[in-house]
Image (cartoon, rainbow, N blue to C red):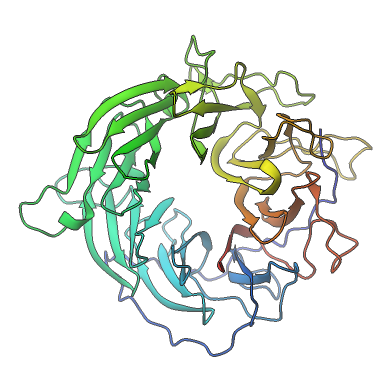
Length: 462
């Protein structure tokens, strides 16, 4: 099943002048005076745009997420190529990383004051990051920088950044790539590339002479993320398995009171040859939705069984009950392939799953009638009843090209904002179709005047 809508024109022009990346470890944490000019909107979404094009500048764009309108407001400055964003638990600030992984990358982490809609401070990181988390009290960010140089050992550190704009410490963990933080903020779990161990980091010990900061716990299979019990005594660690160079994907329990391993479960029940996968997950109660792309012999191996598509390989979604540590679905649920790293539950039980570097089906221009268009977004109907044309337990692959880099359910409404292929699309979760925006009636799912190459989207108000 596919949704049809016009392909959005992209205005992609590389920045003519990139500020040289700082080679220092610490930024001066430059503070910016707070602006008194704000949009006055009650419910806002921030969109990161990483390219200047025509009259549009790179920065953080503000959208009225209640009415799907772009206000007359300048973008907020947040580095040369702003992308990934994280909103603090108290929603006072939004953290934005700007970096391209090249020599000219500025590697800037900006702290935006949500009330004043302005950049309050920034620090320059020693390299690229794809993962940063914020402490529950909204005072500190922990940033994984896998390529950060370390004297006398392999590169990789977790930077500790005060949200006032100062780097206050670090934990040295080789190749650390992803982070998960527990509910109380007393532990951060670090996951390194090509490793079968996790790093259990105690942030309160950083900087204390002789204190144990990092404890390595083996026994995993290319772990990438974790979820925590309400009392923080237990973590459920996601094993990526073959997709990340390991063997078997699944979930491994660990007792964090003594760092001992508990029971484990494969990503699915039909895994005789390590064909299941998991790189991103969403937890709803004790039900874990785990998405990934099965690999065998170092290449994608899952056929697109049950889907009418020109794609030759697909990904899978599997459901695990953490209470019994057992798979729920007897057969894998087929979704797009690629590296899955975005997932969110929209209204009406619609699970949105995003990937990058998937198999794309791009029709000729102009597209023939009925031509397949396929990108990296999948929508799974978790309900036992049909939503639009999608049956209960069914999957919709929208007719849109590109990586799905940002997914944000709009809490006050039954719509989901999705950034795919650099453009923002609005989905109606009651029908699994593009939302009719009365302010842009000729372009379903779009916001009038919103032009850029967008990367991420976050709502910043309660």
